[in-house]
Image (tube, rainbow over the protein chains, first blue to last red):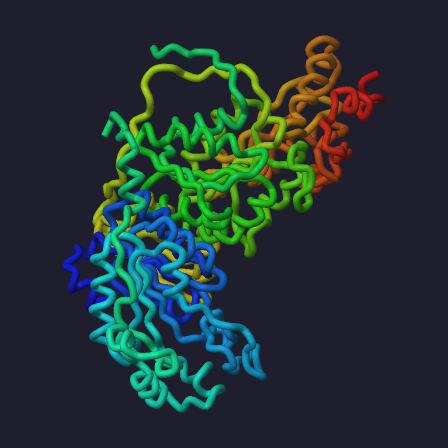
Length: 241
Length: 376
């Protein structure tokens, strides 16, 4: 993400990193920008207020899978609906890692978790389809094993005007891999690489061939009015300014 | 001199006007009775003065957006009622911990739960004190008239900015919906400066030496904002010494500015035998009693009205208990602030509660009846 920010040419002082709560969200505390580590699930709502107060800021919102799609699900769909210019980066390790391996709304059905010792019965979201359905105008997926592609995807998301979502698949060998016999970090990354195919290639494949695959790349990119810009178009500036 | 015009105004309206005149340019909220008028007025007015109105997806998001806007340098406020105030608690605690200025208006209605949405109540007194988890400080104002609502809203916004401390404006359904005459200074409007950075080079967001004005995001002052315990630059720590110091810091700033925060008003006899301690709408019934018993009949009675309920006006109650034999505490609940009055009176005066919780006001007659044997 930092490399993607550098690639965009944004001024460091204009960049803000907002995050929720969880393994992924501690990232904000390690970055040399204005950084805001919020409450669990609420990162997008904080970011929405900040963006509306200061539309010139370039805001990246780091969330985890549980953070974004469970407790923060409502804020996520409404940020999509408004098409507000925020860059959501969802680090999806398919588990609540920090609390020791409970299943999330992005945990594959049948996976074992500390709260699903017999395998979870719940069907996961496809977060990009959810985002698309809710009105987001840019959606992409990358993986931790293909960092260059991920960097490109985040840079494209940042350049996009409107609400963008980049799902970044990552691995949690301790709280997810071990319990599901997926091997260590290396094996998990290898398998992630094997399963990944680009959305372009996927168009030529049928449903059976696509079973269990990770579709990487830009899934959708649409032009639509952006919320903050539209709002300020209707506002009369205060005389004193 | 700008002309001061009398205007007929509702409490909720006075709150919105006060906020705008105190420089508030950001409102985020969610519809809820009986506070909705505040949102509606902000939605009508803010776009004309360069401000932002946002109707968020829920109460939690409204609180979060207000904090986000404040970090961006806009003065920000939200308004709600009991059920919504419950939902806002986690993020309110975040704002306290991260020292982000904001004002939360709670127009109380009758609870628990959905309760009677249109009935007045003072049931959220203890929730405003201890609603969010942890050992936090809080400032709570409770106006007793439309005019008090106007100027306490302004005071709330200004104090919140100065101390980087959330302030709760605790209205009740009576004050929120009642219309009465308000004198508002005419003339020019306050000049609201855009977010800027005027802090010295060695500015720290959480300076050990004491509270510093917030430098908003986007000015090249790189710091971290978190609900975790943090050091002077906002970065997380769990070092016991730093943790203790950080919690002391939050409480110390309220202690230091205590006299600016704690606002009370006394009317009546200098040496009262019986005194009333009231806040919010019950002050009005109490004032009617004092009018007759003291201003007309010169009986030894008095009324201490509390504009600030948290931090609790302990010294003022102590002083009153030295003089009065009896203190009556009328509340539209089963007895919440009366416990604090008792604690501070320390047995020097007898403290008698007067409670009503049927969704109706405490009447002057009820107070007179309670004061009966001291009034004859």
